[in-house]
Length: 394
Image (cartoon, rainbow, N blue to C red):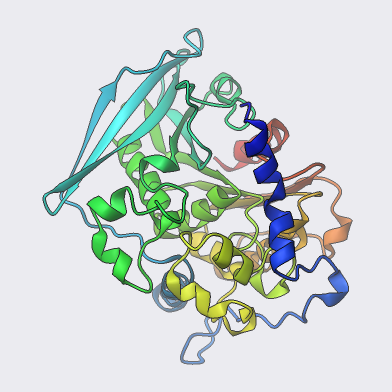
């Protein structure tokens, strides 16, 4: 994808502008001492030791806290959903895959909204195929082109036997603070805009991923039980929250998702809660703004998010030059979050003691991580490493 020079310049300058407006810490010696909420102590002060207590008591408490204080709701109610095939774009891979352009129409309270899903199915093989869904927050191509192969490597996924799909965030909630309501919020869920814990853009994108899964479940060529949800950056934040809401995803991959995604908020390293809420007020619930500059008062932190996905597989990845997303904070969040997998579900998971000692991908049953060279992006190298994890977990 070739962006105009001005667009590239603006994207490059975003962290610079944030640094000019806020004091950004990149010094580990200035990271506050971490005093994190305990996932195994209930709101009544009771210790959570069994799977039964986790699933019936503590998991629900933590979910409600993330929903109320961070991400906002993802409404579940609607009256009808229907699927229709469109034929607007040329299939870029006719020798490898069949393209289904799917219009998903949802109706609620006399209103309807249609989102577009693009699905590629392998020509070889009988199916049912495992499915990989990418949450795509990047702008649609003006010429109607469906994808950037570096970001969404459809040919390589097809060759490895996967069906793969994606939707543009724009089709449900534009990634724009002034226009994010111009989608399902205005048409289907207007009451959410009046709530301090109401749905914002991340919730809308997660809702769209759920509707895509509704389509996969009824598709004769797809094995929806072998499903992978992938998101990069803001899409990675969305993927994690979506999977916490929807247990139908077997593997969840958050690539360089940073603040409000994989990284621990209390580290205040790189992008902070105040910076992200100031720069992108349409992403999180209004309640999240209460914690601007006050991360230590959050009743949860991001290490508790993998526990909402457990025992299903979860994968984080970081890039060495992406200090804005706090790679160390992402790793520590996953490592600390693994306690639910080990202590509650009895899985054998072990991460290195020191983040600095990581020299190769960490792939094990249910949890994985890699830390590659380079900048903030979802690259073929990320996909290549992640697919090795998928092979042992799907």
